[in-house]
Image (cartoon, rainbow, N blue to C red; front, side, top):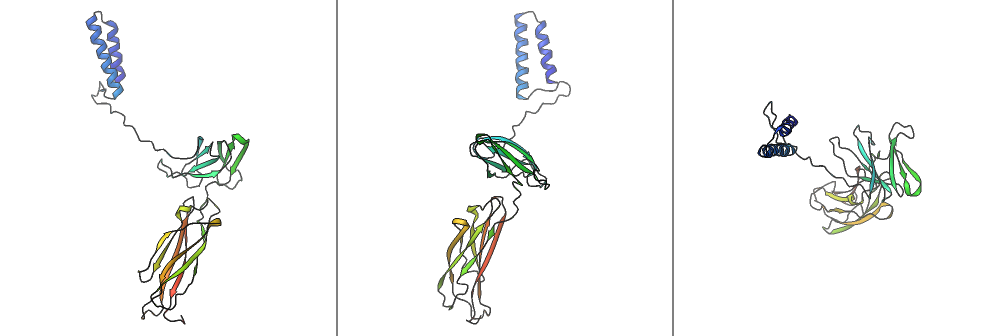
Length: 267
């Protein structure tokens, strides 16, 4: 209805004959145009105001260097659309899993080749799951990702402790070496997630911290545990050392090993 009001004003402008009337009509047209632009025009028939449009914040998601192409598909089979981009300069693709509410999780990158840009999603190997292919412009090739983000397996973690028994129970702090490996053959280990914690049956000595991974996912660190137990504790004092980590697809895993301060040496 706001367009009708403007049209009527413009029609009236064409019929005026004096300078004063032209000036007044032009002013009326100008006011209507201004009100339309700001969303404050009133419906001439029902007398209600047209509400101004409120800008909707648009989230931005990091992907990689020069994301040249984006496609939407359900890559992990959860019934929710995800996004994939080809990162032209970084020679990889980025997958952003959808949350189902119009937002997306953090990107996970998979290596392709230089000039990755053209993307297509289809079931290339006939297993009923969606795969992904990307054209690499600079090297005249394509990269195919079978089940690109179907990594639902947590990292494989091994934990070994030495010594496993603290004796004698003289109250001293004894260094215990914790070692093993953290590996993931899917999306890879998120190296910032590797950590350990100690649970003391008595709730007294419970160190925790981050783990630094070496070649092949190996790690080794030392914790100090107290060689003591209550004389009435017939099964001894038990420490549990837990190592945990996540992969780059968000799957988390953990493994634990124990250290005991026995009641006596026969335990």
